[in-house]
Length: 468
Ligand SMILES: Cc1ncc(COP(=O)(O)O)c(C=O)c1O
Image 1 (cartoon, protein in one colour):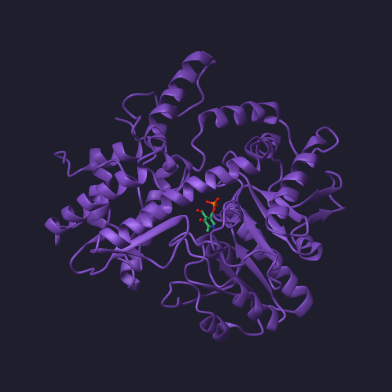
Image 2 (tube, helix red, strand yellow):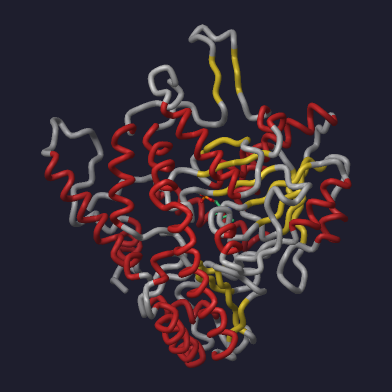
């Protein structure tokens, strides 16, 4: 640690380029040479991609094929400057968008009704908005609430927070999925919809969608399935013969599904599909305004102008991968995930896999007093592996993606994990670096401290590097 109590390290952590590149605080007085701009940015990109390309990172990078990215980049360029709102100029956007929705819908046995959004969060929050409006108009709901398992994605909590919707979290069963009886107990006449995940972010588990949908139907309300993560993968996994419970539109009470093309659809970041069973529900998110001096305004969702590049490149990503490409990727992902799941369960007695996952393996210490899982993470990090940290309970997860399917990855990871467990046993009692922020929560004071620190991090993420 530096003499200043670690301040330099903190600055370097947030702004690693502050000493090696110029930090612009004002617009440069004249144009900078494009070659210089490009080479500086490319250097950062190549350096930052290096770890992910090794296949030692959980989630985040779903495709990993740089030829695919380069092709998508070329397609993006053709329409990067085009605004998809202006269909008279760019009618191809209608073809791309309509066909992205149709292809996603065919995969999930839908009715061909949907929208393309900027990502999973926008799809989820938009769905909540549609349900809130539907409940207000058809049932006069004025104090809306949503019932979902506590593992459902936090973007839903964010959306509820923004839109004044009360969020009711249901506990999990012993199998770590939604406890439907507990969900039933939380539903009342102000509930606007139920939510389940396929699969959830934390543990990669599929909630009992058929039961939740039946509960929704019995109350005459809709159900959203968060398939942001699994939506573009589970259909292929099912086709390969793995036992996947029904979770898509084949389940009668499922009324909307989000499925992210920018995850296992292998599109560029910035695209997701929100599907509805009925056009009537989708209509709630449309905004039309006939009396604006700026003209007749119509917009399908939150965004105004959108780049045509992302729609065209998402369309191209699906066509360039094709069913055989998706199946081959899913096969590699499932083989790797299964090897890791079996390896932990069968050969590392100090750890246990949470539930019975498919492509994302979450694991925790069998005895939390004997093994601090965040110490395990410290060692994995030192060995070059980047896992995702979980809490409540403390755990890690490895979301398997295409870059992790390289030969030998599962074996190398299990070897590293054994070393990490031995490290954690040796260091038990020493505070873990990667767990520093965990454990503060759970009390009003602890949460207030954490919230202040997290807001400070967000501030820092929007600041230019401090001078000096
Ligand atoms: C299950 C699930 N839902 C929603 C999201 C949010 O997606 P995004 O980060 O694209 O907004 C994620 C992200 O990982 C996810 O795993």
